[in-house]
Structure formats: structure tokens, C-alpha cells
Image (cartoon, rainbow, N blue to C red; front, side):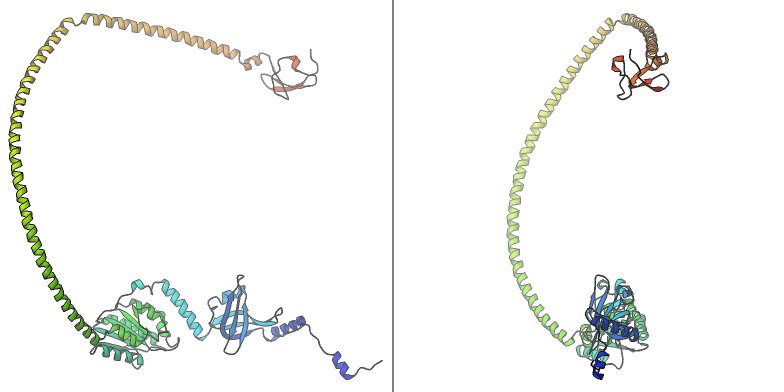
Amino acid sequence: MLEKTPVFQRLNQREIFTPTSLAARLQQSFNHDFSNLWVEGEIAELSLSSSGHAYFILKDREAQLRAVMWKSRRAYAETVLIEGMAVLARGRLSLYALRGNFQLVVDYLEPQGEGALRLAFKQMKTRLTAEGFFDETRKRPLSYWPAKVAVISSATGAAARDFIQTALARRPGAAISLYPVRVQGPGAVAEIVLALEDLNAWGGFDLIVLIRGGGSLADLWAFNEEAVVRAVAASRIVTLAAIGHSTDLSLTELAADARAITPTAAAEAVFRDQGALLTHLVTREVSLARAVTELLTFRSTRLEEVGHILRRELIENYTRRRDKLNDLFRSLGRFEDRWSLNTQKLSDLTRRLLQSASKISIERRNHLDNIVATLRFIFPAGTLFVRRRELAGFNDRLVRAWAVDFENLRKRLNFLQTRLRDLSPGNILKRGYALVLSKTEGTLITSSNALTVGEEISVHLAEGIFIAEVKDIK
């Protein structure tokens, strides 16, 4: 028998794992050492499954970590589950044995740094949009040539200096008033709101310009505060905002009547180039004078042509009207002749009609008198009286005869009703008779030939029914 060498003993003491057992051992270690982790990173590759779970990666500049947030925990991260958002995640480390990958099972998420500001920006923008602060229909146009402009900005910043220099270069002697305020940090919001309220109370300004140079979202945050946005929207004076650079966008710019991407662009939008405008006006004046001269020449020539045409047409029209009037006078003379002749004919016809009507009226009246006299002579008054008495007698006799006939008919009806009651089946049954019906078919039995021995029959009496069985037939 071979003796076990120390090397062989060490080989026998090795702990050998399967993938499943190793995964279980690692999971136990994760549960012991990594059960409550806080991980800071940026959300990437976000995937929201139909089951409600969220899968994503937490990354920084050098590494990344897979993460999952189950549906039951989504309520603790709904507002910050945005790709690119910097977050602070709390969870436990877990091993996905089927793929051999480990992941962070997240229980809670909260935004971090600029990501929190982006989230607050988005939420406030959504709420103020719903209230109509950014509606284009409420915005007013800028004055074409503002006489007095107020600027709200930092007194030491380059933004106000760039604006004023550009404005004076474009319009020397422009009336610009600077209201100095802090544009970031503690107290900035209160000073900006107070500046807007003071300028509106003082009045006399055609435009208020809010200016701030570029910076991070945190540097520009004073112009995303709700108090500043509401103050800009409530301004009775037209407002223009130029906050940050062209890539920056603040809620104040959305609420203002107009926006410029830089302070220089704001000055160019407010103050038109005076020299260029004068040159343009001179050029337009020369062009206008030339156009007016050409138009007057054309109109004068055209007026002379129209005058000749009008005079010719006037003479021709006058000649036509005069000839037509002469023809009308001649026609009127002939009409007067016909009118006189027809008037005379009408007078003759009227006289003849009156004579004829008088003669016919006399003849009709005489004829009517003759008819009346004849009727008076032959009117049968006595005969009519006799016929009326005969008619009254006939009426009395008719009434009496009708009463006698009615009484006879009533007696006949009573007799028939009595006979009908006597012959009714109910009265017959009351006198001791009975109706016999087949129990199975329900037919009336009138002969013993229709019966069989042992058959059941239904016997109907005046009061009640009973069932009988045929014992014998005779």
C-alpha cells in the first residue's frame, strides 16, 4: 500500500467549485459585504421593459456597472430615470448566474449635481407651460425705434459692457439706463425681481433688457427661478432676455417677449444701425423721388389721353342724346293725337252705355213688379194651413205606433232571454244532467259505443267534476 505524500494530501484538500456553487458563494459574499451600497454615476443605455422593470448602466469616465430596478421600486425613481442624468443610487450587489454577470439591484435613486438642476428645470418648465407663461400669443413685439432702454445686469460683467458698446456704435447717444444687480449666487433672485418691479413702477422705458454672460446651468440658475419668470411675465414694459450663450436656454428667455442668443445680438436687435439706416433712407429717398417723377409723367400723359377720349365721347354722347330726345318729342306728339282720339271714343261709349243701362233697368223693374203681383194673386195660404194640420196628425200617429212596436220588441227580447237561460248548459246540469268526456282525449261522449270497459271518464256536474271507470256497457 502506497503512503500518501504531503503533495498528494494537499491535492486531496483542494476545494473544487462548479459554476453554480461558485455563484452561490459569491452571492453570499455580496449579501454580506455589498448589501447596502451607494453608487454615484450617470444613467446610460436605459431600457424600460413591458413588464415594468428598468435596466440601465451606471457609468463614470473609466468604468460602468450594470443595474436593474424592479417594477415595485420604480416609484422611488420615476422622475430621474432619464438617460444622461447624474444620479446617486442605493442598492445591493447581485450575481446573475445564467450569464455570470454581476449587477446592482437598485432600491432608490435621486438626482445629483447638474442632473438635479436639469430635472428641476424640466419640471418647472412643464408646470409653467401649462399655466401659459410661454405662450407665443401673449408676447409683444419690440419697438422699432425705442427712445429709452433699461438694462438689468451686473455692473462689472462683460455682458452689460458688450451690450452698451454695441448699442452706442449703432446709435450714438442712445438713452440706456443700467440697473445693477447680482446675476448669480445668494440674493440674485430677489435683486432681479426688485429691479423689474422698480422699472415698471418708474415707467418711461420702451424696453427692459435682461443680460447675463455664459456659464454652467448652476451659474445661470437665478434666471430659472419661478419668481424671476413670473416677474418677467408680469412686466407691463416689453422685455428682452439674453442669458448665457447660444446653446443656453433659460425659463426667463422663454417668458420674455423676445430673446437674443448673446448680449451683442440683443443690442443689434434693439438698436438698429443709425448710419446704415440713414444711408438706406437716402437711397430710398432718391429711388422714391425718381419713381414719383416717372409716375407723375406717366399719369400726366395718361390724363391728357383720357381727357381727349372723354371730350370725344362727350360730344358723341351729346349728339346721340339730342337725336334721341327729338325722336321722343315726335313720338310724344303722335301719342297725344292718339290719346285725344281714344278719349273721344271713350266718351261716346260711356254715353251709350249709360243710356242702355237706364233702359234695361226700367224694363227689369217693370217685369219684377208684374211677377210680384202675380204671386200675390195665386199664393195658396189656406191649402198650406190644412197641410200643416194633417202633418201634425201624422206625426202623433207615428209616435204612438213607434211606442207600441218598441214595447212589443222589448217583451219579445225578454222572452228570448228567458228561453236562452233555460237552454244554457249550466241550467241543464242543475236539473240533474251531466257531461261525460273522455279523460285521455277530452272529447264529449254521446254514445255508449264510444266507451270501452276499464276506460276512465271525466264526469262534469253542475257543481264539480269526478273521474269514473267504466265497469260494464249495456
